[in-house]
Length: 103
Image (tube, rainbow, N blue to C red; front, side, top):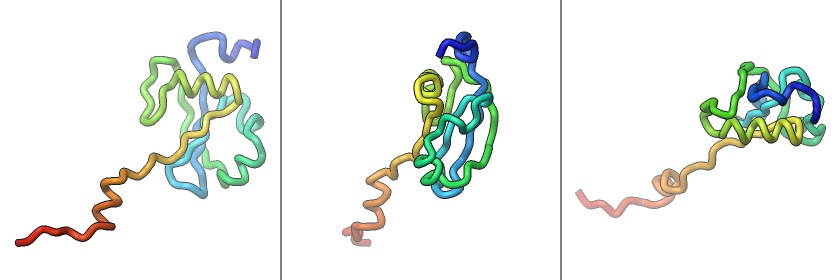
């Protein structure tokens, strides 16, 4: 893109959470909105619920993604999809395996 919305090191980003999948988020350029997000993705994502608007810079700290990666994805594809975190295997094992401890 050659317009000025990505020229600086800042991007006004709107973050939507999925109404179908817990901890799934879509990051988009606030000015573009959801226009660049493929229809098939929106169908699986469910109704996007706006959670916040932030100014992204490459140095900004995000919980589960690098801001520079988010900005690059928005620049290239028009959106960044953050998937829910993987469940830790060892936590699942706590429920699967009976304990052998003797008291």
